[in-house]
Image (cartoon, rainbow over all chains, first blue to last red; front, side, top):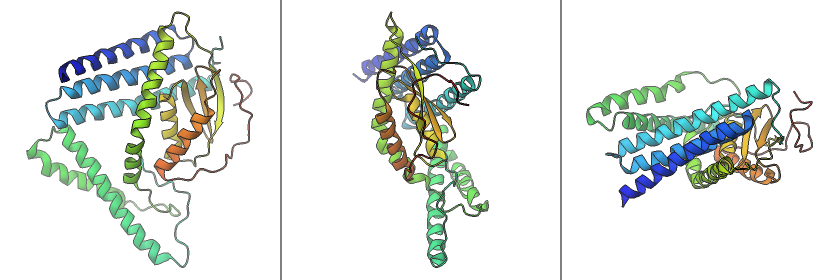
Length: 97
Length: 207
């Protein structure tokens, strides 16, 4: 039961990573691409971490996975802000259809 | 975690000096204990809870937790802002954040996969009511995880890029801002930036 739940979470996580990459390739400008990367990839990583936590051997290992997710969340939030404000400073206009 | 003492309340009125002193001591003690718990918890996780390292970890966690007490505080720093209540309140809000994050991920994934890619992006300024400090940074990180919004902090303004300008998201932003204010224990104030009308234009004339 836990095993199949874990597999489901891992597959869903991989699906969101795929969606993030598809968005990165298809979306028209830097801002919309950041949307795809920050949201879809963080959710994908969160689901994968959750799936792996179900298989973790100890509470400490599960906690370590959780800390990894929180650190990536913080780092990608900061990185997306930096990229977006760099694009603003370069006066890159948002794509408007 | 962040806890710069950027409080804008000036502590130490003339009469209540001793009371201020002792309550400052108490909050320093609580802050030190909170930092110790955090650092020791991280040590415990990183060493996979190995028993033979716990004493060493406790020693260094205690040293690291005590270090900020040795650094003299800048004048007018006010009460050091407690880390622990912020973390606890953040945990209470976690289900909401997780739910919004899930919804945001599904939303953007659906847009990416749909053949016609329904996008109507726009950028506008949101006038912050949060005081400067760690709270606006937290707000910006959260806004970027919410459905359809991406945040860029610039001073007293929060620039928001939205994927779908046909949906108004200012109410959601205001709600989120109020939650972040509660989390950090700070009061919202009237926006100070000169009021730009809520535009949905591009970069245009602003700096």
